[in-house]
Length: 194
Figure 1 (cartoon, rainbow, N blue to C red):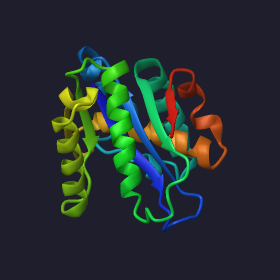
Figure 2: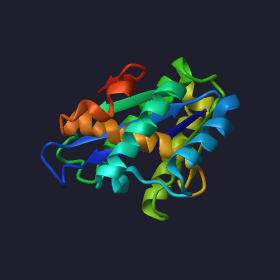
Figure 3: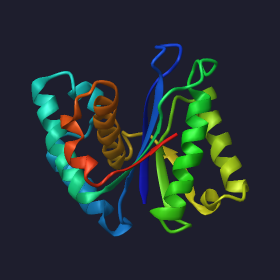
C-alpha cells in the first residue's frame, strides 16, 4: 500500500516554486501495526506536521516519528524543482507529479493492482480535479491504470500522517537547507526529480 501527501510553493507564492509529492509505501500486512505505533508515538488522534514544526517540542517529535518511519516505510518522493510561471495554482505540477508517482509505484514498489490512498483536498474544484486525474489514469494504458487509488481525509486515515511527515522533512531539506529532519529518511528514500 502507499499513502500520499503533497507540499508545494506555487508560482503565485514565490518565484522559487516547487512541487513535492510524497508516498509512504508499506506492506499491507504491516499497516495496522504501523498505524497503532503512530497513534502511540503521537499520543493523540490528530497530527499535522506543519503545526508541530512550530515548537521545539514538536520538532523533536517530528525527528522521533521520522526515525520510526525510516525503519518501517519506504519513502518515494517526486519533486518538480521549478513550476512553470503560468502554473499559478500548481495544478499542472500536481497532475505531472501524480502521474509520475503512480507509475513509479506501479512499476517499482507495489503490485500493479496495489492500493494508493491520497489525502483528499477541499470539496469542489480541487476534489473534482483529483477525481478527473485519477479517472484519466485508470482509463489509460500506463502501468498505474490498475492501481486502486482513492482519497481520504487525514482525520479518517492516520497513515496519511506518514507522507505528511516525510514530505515536511524533505521540504525543509530541499527548500530550507535543514537536512536534519530528513537525515534518516534519506537513507531509504527514492527521490525522483522532474
